[in-house]
Structure formats: structure tokens, C-alpha cells
Length: 297
Image (cartoon, rainbow, N blue to C red; front, top):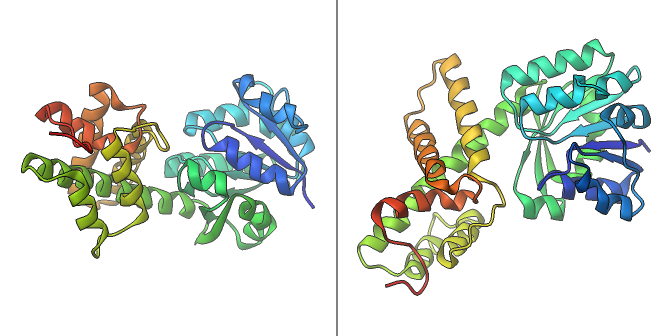
């Protein structure tokens, strides 16, 4: 059984690392050391630098904010790549651009490591439950080698293709997520403006062909005015930007997604970037002056 290293213990990374530590010998690292304290309290070894993670692990999972952060933990002072042994695996679970993924894969290969790009679909709840959708891109033998580690964090493991295809799949999934959430916000705001109670609309949507767990959960958050971030709007904006960059490179028109990106940016400018993606509706509310809430006038 491999030893697994986990780098990045944020809102998503911490529960993912917890699930890994339940099934494997595990060592963790986080750039802000406070996040490692609960792991240390539970007897999980804590590294002083990413290099120590790689020195002790056969598979190293990286779950950080963006491409710059991945490069930092790989190649910065005490970087993970300096501790890789020939044939060790690095799994990048962070959502980054396709160009970032290609660069990161080359860096790992230059260090004689094996690379799998595996961003995840899901938010904090599925991360805690170990039910994230794992979007794996890499050589078949490399995905085979790390599949048990991936399954400790999520199910299913979707084999998307070669290195980079996991990233392409994630950006396409999150494009849809953003577009759906903006349309949902618009639907609720229009109904509210016409005097319909939010619970009437949630029942109407949830009883038909548009019913989904996503809209059930986010609709309840909106109705209660609870915007605590499971997936922050700032990160949704980042993913929309990356998707549109990829679309530009591939000459694929995405007019609805371009509008969603600007709606997300407007909500961020109004101070809602650190709130959940349910806060798409707050960008509309701030303009209209009306809140879509249970028990509202």
C-alpha cells in the first residue's frame, strides 16, 4: 500500500486529506501551518516543506488555489519536485488552466515523476463524504497506479483521457455550473419581482424536469439568506475565465458563459466574491433592492 502525501488543506483539501488518511499512511503539508494542527492532533505526520512530503510518499496529491500556487509548492524553496524518487506519482487535484496543466506535467516528468491531472467536481459536502467526482487525465497505467487513492476521495473516477483532459473536463463542467446558477438566480429574481413566493418557485422547479440536487441545495440557501461558501463565487469566476480563455484558443463561441462571467464579476465587485455561488442572486438583488427570501414581503 502506498504512502500518500497531501499538499493543500483548504476548505476542499482538508476533508479530502482526511479521507485519504483513513485508508493510507499519509503525510500532509499546508503553506499556512495552522491548517495542519488538527491533523497533527490526530497523529497524522506533518511535513515542514513539500519536499518532505515527496521524500516520504509514493503518491503526492496537490490541492491548492491556482496554477501559481501549484508551481510554488512544486518548485519553490523546499519544493515537492526536489523530493521525488524516480517513478513517484504526482496528482494535481487543483483546477488550473490547460496551459498550466501542460507545464506542471512537464515539470514532473523532468523530475522523473509520473503525473495525473485530476481536478474534482463537487463542493465541501461531497469532499467530506468522499463522493467527489474525480476527473482523471493521464496515461492509463498511471491512473491505474493511483486509482485507489483517488477512490479514497471520490466516486466515480471518470477517466477523461490523456494528461490535460481532466482539466478540460473540469472547465466544461464548471462552465455549466456557473451558467445554471446565474439562470437560476435570474429565474428566482423575476418570480420575486412578480410577487411569487420563493418556496412556490422552488416547488415549481423541483417538481419538474429541471429538478436537481444542486438547485434544491442552492435554492434553500437563497431562501434562508445563507451564503456561507461551499464553493466561493471568486473561484467560480476564475473557472469561467479559464473556460473562456480555452474557448478563445479553440474558436468556440460561448456567449452565455461570457455573460455569466460578467455577472459573477459584478457580484464580486459588490462584495460577494467570498460568498457561495448561490450569491449570483445577490448581484441581482443589489441592483433591484429586493431580496429573494423566505418570508419576504
